[in-house]
Image (tube, rainbow, N blue to C red; front, side, top):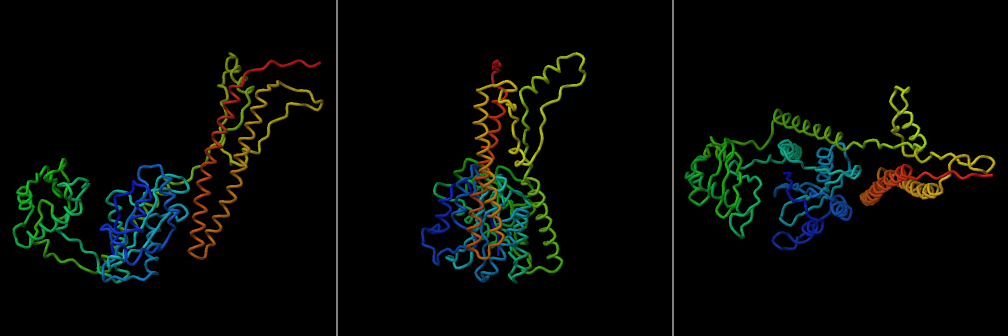
Length: 437
């Protein structure tokens, strides 16, 4: 078993789903047809298409070798552990996942798609971040499950060609995979025939084909192939300065882990999971919202006048910023301008009175809709927690994702209504007080 992530993820959901459920890369119909193991295609597609970031999703594959035939129960268990360790502290109500099984190549391949979006904070979430720690976490996850299922450990070819950012073609019509495989085959054949024994021999062979070695380091070398505009970096054991190819070919590599090796892998894997949990709890924590208390214009004017008086030494009190739950903000009521006689007790501004009605209706409408929506979200979370079947869970996830998206839109509308409220109060023109007989 081996876990691998792909570099693609900028397109919409249509070409991705067309590849997963349609024909393979060679144009052949997949037989047997792909089978969904977990998730919902419509929910995943919607989350990918609504993402406004450049990187819209992450995709990968959990592939099994020809002799490895896990049961459906074992594959679901692998997916659950994958969820817990590659998105620790998040959960399915925040990170969506679609998994489907391909068997058309004769072996089992579980393709996974994760929209790069946290459904709670609407921030970008990458389940496969760049860096050595994540790459090692993938290898350790595979090693632990191979040991648990009784499979042989994955032994990397020491002469394997690893290309870094190989985004160019050596010749027109040749693709990345074809060039990589051709170079690997040539290197392996040269080592078998003892024509290539070290990196110097490899450099000479590449230069005879028209390639140019632009840079060579202790553990890598950069090659500019014929027809390329930029050089690419080759890395791996075969490209180290002191590499001995005959020794690499005969080196013994264990197919099973002993107790010490297993403990080392498990400790390293758990450390990586804890580091990701700490990062997720910091970046995706829901911060408390700030709300501004209502301050009448008369109070602002009196504060400015008091600041100009020489006998007052203390600085004027600024507008107070308080943090309150959103329910308390809407319970505030404005004092009446009329006394028991029915006559006005203060300045009357017809324009501000009309604006206040419009303002109250806008904020009140948003608050009423938000309160109703939050009750629906609570009910949807309860349905998700009480789901007993996969169908019930899928429906609850879809409903919860739609409601949380609507909630974020309402919060944005509410903030705009509050800003309009504050601007209207500060810009209202003074109106002369009428006299009453």
